[in-house]
Image (cartoon, rainbow, N blue to C red; front, side, top):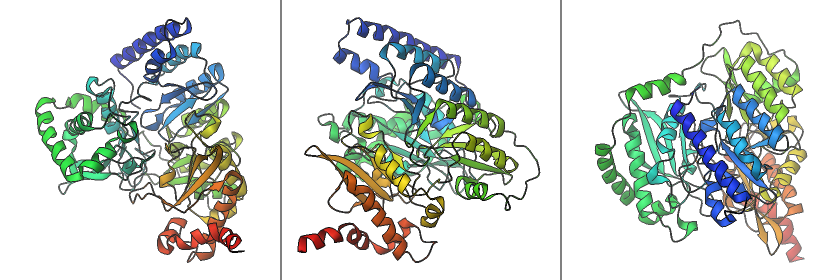
Length: 553
């Protein structure tokens, strides 16, 4: 794991000291809330419905046991004993007292964590494939690239006040697990015809009020040109992005209104200038970053035959265990979506249990996925029974990864000041409705994603079934979209029609799933494949036929 330098550590400590003084002045009334707001947002502190919320960065989703235990300590000491993992590889604490936040930031700095650039109109926490460094299909570990971007973008003087927030995601695999096409910049690692590594560069993706799939602005960018090219994109956006309307300020609008060809010409022209101005990255720095992400020394032990293991373990292996680049090892996805639970929430005891398991069985590495789950990236297959037992003891062995109850949901109106509808209770009800794991396995891969407002933190636009909660004249109303996809074949979901009341939305989703089960060719055809074959019509009929019959009566 990459250890921050003395410069990084001093930078973070200075920011904490600075913010401690700003908090003191807010508490004694020297600063008004309007004056304090931009200062707290620069340190990841929001004011939500009931309390402050602190958003902590987990760069490229990577943690070790010491960092995870510190998050548990913070949850116990200054919050309500739990934290919430988000869709951008952050963790949020929902109940800190303002007076305690500087102490929390100091505690984070003790283990090399911080909340810098987790909010504001700047380059946010860089995200990456949660299987990085372990996946069998990986071209190259994307985390050194993400770390290089973190170092380049942190406190970048030219990009501290962009037209809007700016998000970058990196994947090192042809199978996109980082939703790169729904980010302002997406980087997909490739090799050219000579085998040299580089990137496909995607710009202008994003969800929210005006969802768009990103467009390829460069088919292949050599690794050495990465920072000058990113600098060029950001300069074009910073100069030309709209600042007159916050809803039209994202780079996706600039790309859409200007046109891809013209934007590409502007970026390429700026790239020629930046490449001449920006010194190449120090090879020694690059080597040290890449060395920090070198694969762990994997053990060589016999791999047992687990085909006769008990049903619970077999189900867990079938669903939550993925191929590792080393055939004797496995990647274990730990579901943070138990039946009836809040997606992404982890208690402090569960965080400590995950830290213990990672330390003992996963070379002290953990990852946080954009799907709000926790990954153990390097588990020897001989240890799978012990890992399963330890997870089960911690209430973390739910075998539902990628299934109907593995739901992404934003905090919604239970916490968020922007939300206009509840998300968590909808996710809990769906999870309870489809609690039977055998039934879930029969339904097969299905991604349900729920957002409590138009800002789309739950990524509903790229859910196979997306649910968007809105306010209609003071009443919660839920729109459904179908066919969304956040992978390398990214697609935005199509809206089915009128929305549903709070007590109608779970029955509506049940009808969609029953329709899929009735019309699929066989068990090998997934919900998304069936939707792409059949189109909207049969699903729409299942949703609204009863209503049409009532109108005709």
